Length: 411
Ligand code: BGC
Image (cartoon, rainbow, N blue to C red; front, side, top):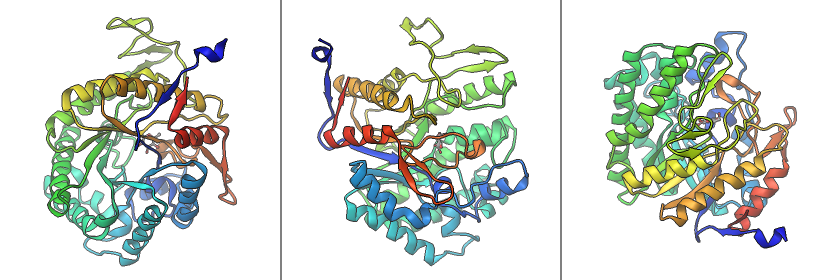
């Protein structure tokens, strides 16, 4: 009987299925970056260290993405701190490295989505004031131009900046991440400068490659604020709202696609009181919320949210959307399969209603260094043996592989 009720949701031909990763979290030994310096500052911080050794193991990883996961795309980031470890000094070995990385993706037929800035900056840039100072944008522009020149022939999609909202919120508002500043004034300045940085990067890439596909990946979710400090939570939510949708308004016309990183829905926490801002328990704007379900790190699972975000962004901007990140910290791997299935169900629903969503990148391929949370959260479809760095597929990896192979989700 139940099988009669099952529905198979077919994704459009050419839909991209991939995983997303960021250099600092997986490559290892990113010693010239501001994050590396931050990790060493206090004995209490977990360190990225050799990370997942992806710098050395990228070929095997990409092969697994292709042959095990049946993926047809991958989102990665290029590490500015490797390419330009000191101001003006370009490391040709690293350029050659990333050319090998991108050409491996090409050989395997995996479309590449390349992020140019995923939270980390070279330490020298951060010491100069980073994105706080408009005059520093020229350094970012030079780096972008270099990447276009060196890698342009091998990149399918460009993501200029990953999650400016989290970068600003955690680094300039909550003050927990590098450069650990707490200032509304600075946060606002960085906000405007990142809008400008994105626009300039967009122009630079298009000058060289007129039909390039350039976008940005923004986090449509809660910003993890410091525990127990109510004002931080309020502030983080406000920043989130302000820089999510409005970031796009300020840079409208500079997006060939919109990158949506979706993990959870908004909420604020104060002691034991949890207030869901977007979709409070029961009803908000007439919508019922599913029973609260959480990941290992307490993020509220709310698959339907990806549908609301996609619908809203499509209505306003009418450019193709890619789900550039979606994933769950789930060390038992007991929720990941359903998590993927449910989110894809809502993605499919949005597509059925005319929203042009063209791909889904799962965060992440393998358990990795989760920023201030260190090695605790397990976001990987593969777990990693910490000693041998061996990748071990979780059950959900088999599920995702089947979805990518068939281009279908059964619900
Ligand atoms: C970030 C990733 C991070 C993930 C899970 C996203 O917001 O882009 O770098 O690992 O969240 O914490």
